[in-house]
Length: 71
Image 1: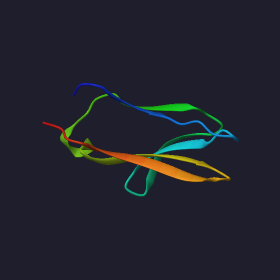
Image 2: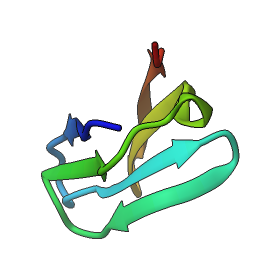
Image 3: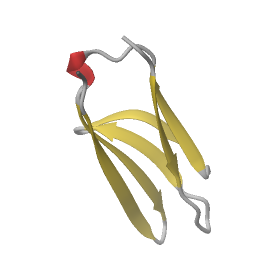
């Protein structure tokens, strides 16, 4: 039931589109940004899983994933 904040930062030229995903679902997007936070205000056991941040511009795409465990 406590909040969790996940952060993602990326730089590029042109500035990337940053997106947070869980599975195939987009949770949050921010165009032309260097940082994007995903706030889960009240984490419950069903929030557990893999979250991915994707940075993409016309030169390519890069992603990082994390596994959230809820006790």
